[in-house]
Amino acid sequence: SFEIALARSVMTLPVPAGRTILDVLREHGVDMPSSCEQGACGTCLASVIEGEPLHQDVYLTPAERRAGTSIITCVSRARSARLVLDL
Ligand code: FES
Image (cartoon, rainbow, N blue to C red; front, top):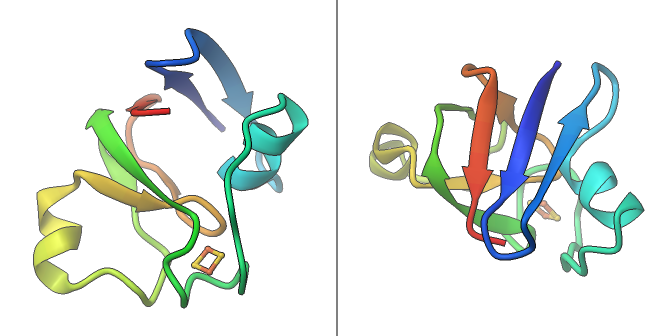
């Protein structure tokens, strides 16, 4: 598991194994749009301010993956203990 800190909402939320970032955001009232929920469409993209994403989507380009400044919240997770998102 890891945690997400929401820079604009000033919340820190744990993301347990078996839950997605998208699930956790919605549980806490963050209005994140989604469509496919399988990592393919990019609708649920969030900007990463700090921390290292563990990309599990098929949407981002290789360059975007390397840059580490965005994450597909319906499938991807974190390599670092904490991700700070621009939400
Ligand atoms: Fe389609 Fe997340 S909802 S990539």
